[in-house]
Length: 135
Image (cartoon, rainbow, N blue to C red):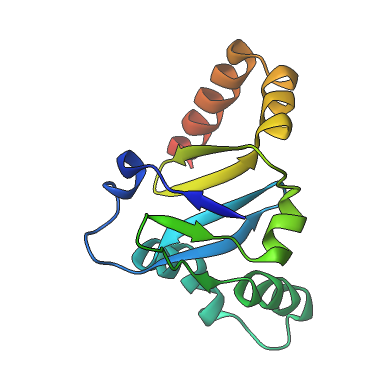
């Protein structure tokens, strides 16, 4: 499956910086720029080898990191194992999520939106931000 990454999202990344597909969320494929990947996943490098659970998590996430290669038409081929993990079928929805991009199977995304009405999403979002700012 090839997808075109909308320019509006690409323009949010540092110009010329490599992009990566990452298995970051269990229901979609994530695209991160190199600096975002390093910042979000770099904390793994400070881990203690005796923490087996943490090392297993690190292995799963970091083994999924694959460079995004765009063709001359601006499309990128999503690796099969990531497509299968995210349940991507024919139609996909691309979302800008802060400093990274998510690619969802459209039906899965629409179902997710039905399960979480915007009022509840806003309440959760602002409650968590408030909690984080108090910590």
